[in-house]
Length: 379
Image (cartoon, rainbow, N blue to C red):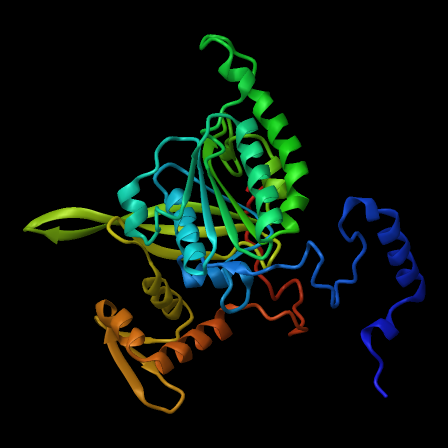
């Protein structure tokens, strides 16, 4: 007769777990868990919110059909016009597609109604909350968490705070413009607020996404020249940190005139508690429709030699031995019209891109390459 997991556990650990749960019964939440089977643990990911890029979803989750983890905090950083708000808005749109609620907390007063609709957001169902200060931001988040807990605990909610950089503090708002010395107040309040809400978020089906701008650190000759607004608290509490960088413009001839119709963006996962960090994904952003999802597929297929390229034509060898030929402009149509082909290509990408947690070949110090370029504690 096979033993159950409870039979294999340490008797003392089981006793301690029971004692701790009784001791902290007044909190209303279970305190001690066994992670092998306990789905009530705050560390348990309660689902995934698609980011708008299937390849970024895989890079974060290190598994098929991933995305932004529910019950965790995510920070999206980058310089101006790198696509931070857009990526967060895609998460809101995908939340609505799953029947969830989208909450947009705007501290910059810069949301575009037309663009949000263009990427698929239903504005009649999205809660838009313009706020000025960090204190109000945390009160709004706490209010949403408490309301969800009382009404429908199982409903998915995504909260986007755009952005930390744009939020002031009450003490700063009360002072004159020429008064200085209150820069640390935001970092202190952020640190206190995140300590309070992190476990609250972990107990609910809530995905909390912060956007934040990169700032240049003065006098830095070596290492990372950038830092983020509001201190280090968000970086410490976030389970996933992304850094976006615009790497080029996308131009097309419209009415006989060359015009910029989008940007190419590189997204690096600089911190990841869901899978291996420091993975990078390139995707295109079009001003009229947002992220080009299937263009990201083709980029990964080229990087991992899943397709052969001859001039403008690509060739994919299927499992049954047949060839599929296409040009990049026809790739989306080709795979969306054939669900079997789409699933086969997706599985091939996952097999090539996902890191397997298993013993592999042993490497000596002379068999590896050490890249001295690194991401420091600021991301």
